[in-house]
Length: 355
Image 1 (spheres, rainbow, N blue to C red):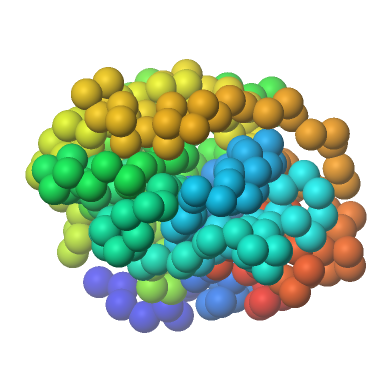
Image 2: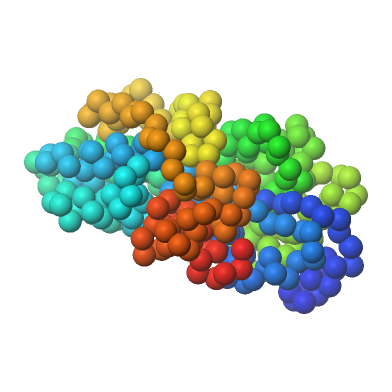
């Protein structure tokens, strides 16, 4: 059994793989790949490209603009995970951090339950939690809404920007010029939806898929497994991350999601509107829906800019293909969310210079 990175790399080289493009669909994978310098170790022609696996990155600018407007409402305390505070809207430099400096009430939380506690401590304010993420974080948001309902916390609501991985991958594979030959599937998401959540890839699209962990050896083993599947012509779902992922996933978390949310059409940066790709609160929880509570409607799409985040997160270019990368756009002064997020492809490339 191969155990060390050196042994796995030798096995990959022994396959003598043809040029091929693979995609990781998880921002944590993107950062781990960059940190370990994995792209520089693979045989020439084996490319790893980043997909739409960074929740902050796939949130479009017009939605960020709505959030910035809501932040200035004197009735509101906005609560969010830290990454969201630095994401710019359509105006360069405008972010929740800037709005907080202008007097907006914006608080960083580590859990949506923290936002409920803030609501209890501020009964005269409306506390809004910005629910960003995929299936991984969605159960925690669902639990918070159900807790608020049970405890009668009426000044708490959620702005759900939660998204589902499967519809995004389907949309991605339907794009003109799609060239990806295999997916490193997100281990964190798979802990919730299980191996079964990715069976559609080989069964409907003939696409090799490997659920990967996050250590360098995990990722290299997953690349090896994908290359083997491609050479053998036997696409299937392989679970490299068996220490955390089961066939059926976390069924308790799945039931929690079903109690709180229903799929709805949603807007993705780089992919546009995708049917049944977002999670909206069910009708019986409408009183906790911030978009309904504040009558929020989607703003018009901003004018296109030179930022190429949409192309980066759909694998159409690497971060360094963006004309702003490392020049106008840096972690200290980001133009797009891919340079802001701790899971962003541009942030990973800038920090480790390996993409």
